[in-house]
Length: 458
Ligand code: SAH
Image (cartoon, rainbow, N blue to C red):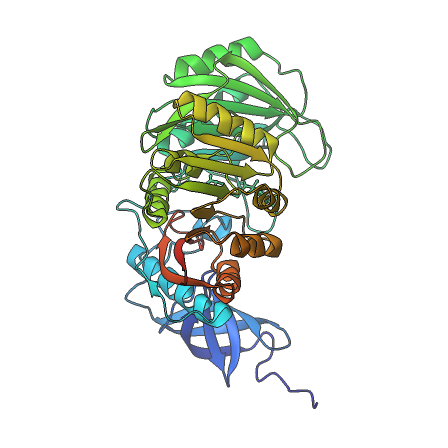
């Protein structure tokens, strides 16, 4: 085949109209049919761009001048939005974000899953889409002798010193700023990645949005934390709702934030929070959903789609700390949860006890290994709920589900592409996808979560 010349050249300027938005928030312009991805461009906007990279079938550009802004464009309220990279959609109105996420889900289901005959509901968003994250993990560095704390500049390890992150709970900002000031006062040296010297690596804050309880975690390279007692006293004094102060020691040269050794310096090992009326104990290392308000919306939808009457046996695959399992247990006869991380299952069991829920059983293992075993042992499920990580379900698991023939499947997904792929397999195995409900768990970022309801065709 003759080599097709790209119709654009690097470092040249072009006038374009953006036609689309990629799932990660870049505008798409076409020059003689050749797609160019431009960060910060919005559909229907007229702009001057500079092409900065040309690949085989597409290129990248930079927005130089906006001739006609979209009516959906807003000024990003965060002063470090462009450098940070944590959010991708702050320049798009919240309504515009929800519409873009809806369109993405619908398109991906059709393109990858060939699923067109399905109701996709409008995305359930937040009434106030700011200040929702309940966990902050902020790297600490040094500049001119003082401490800085913030997020890494996109694609680098340069720390942006910042006072506020607008998607964090305000309390988490307060904790980070206060602990930074206290550590500076006691001359605690920040960890230096290059030299592998220094002490304080990260400050972590966890906040129970319902209970208002605060956990402070100091992640240090060394076991020794100079002036430990004074630092603890100052934290208690200046952060009134603190219930737990923890030190985590990570002596390794690594990008992994936490180490193996966790010590309670003061107060409790846990803070508590609620999703709906279920209480959760959260330790420094526990996995816990970062947007509890929307998590409740998501789980209520999963519960509705499970259509439980109290007589059912339900399997919750990829159950984490048992959040969905415990939510379902109130309305089911029996729930079996399975999860690969042993510590998460310990948390799940503790949370069941904490809530007096006795009709759940948790197993450690890969869902694709445990479900076939349950199937062989004759476990019969009326409903199977899956909530896999981004890569989706293992094919063995999907085939086992098809063989087990539950009347209903509820698929909770954080990645529409793998959801579409897996729904196709389930459809080919005899299921019908009836409806898909996207939920906005992470406003201003490019992520979207979906709950899907499937029924076994007669
Ligand atoms: N349902 C939970 C967790 C969902 S996140 C909640 O809503 O909080 C996905 C979970 O799947 C993670 O806890 C991860 O540890 C787990 N996981 C990943 N691969 C797995 C596998 N092959 N089998 C079982 N669990 C797995």
